[in-house]
Length: 244
Image (cartoon, helix red, strand yellow):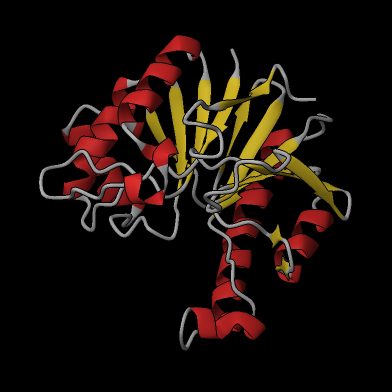
């Protein structure tokens, strides 16, 4: 069994949800087919894949069904988190009901919870990517309220991870949609939480168009890894057994 990660699939398979991503660069040309081809060439039914947000352009849960069915058709068990463009995302009860009604069996939600996969634990949340100095970028936003909410959600997930780990000395891997650190931006509240729980590896998406940078960097003792689909050229990145 291997663990992979990828984020920002930005699928729009459903009728009437045509959102061409080619406007963001040639790498996005025919990206859904490229994703499927790369996925099936490497990932097996025994593998696990974390998809850290921005999964579908759909605005409603029912409209996201074709994209979710496509993901379900791919090999492996998928653990999906919420991104800033996942407007279709609703309550766990409604989403699980949709899955049951439509025979979707290989997708699980990574949301206020955690999973133990062999010798590591996965957990995560959406995060946040704007500080007070940058509020003009997104309009009138209550930074403190949003960050407190996201920190609370991440802490719930981390607490579940700690319970699952018990007395075993195995790593807890954190998957966020937004980067907790990117260039001049730092979310100190999330960094502080990661350090409180001894997290050494954090994976994030959201960033696009940066193809000539290292796939990871270190910040305050934490390895930060970019997992956006276009950065990975639509090939999910292996974490385990290539974890270190």
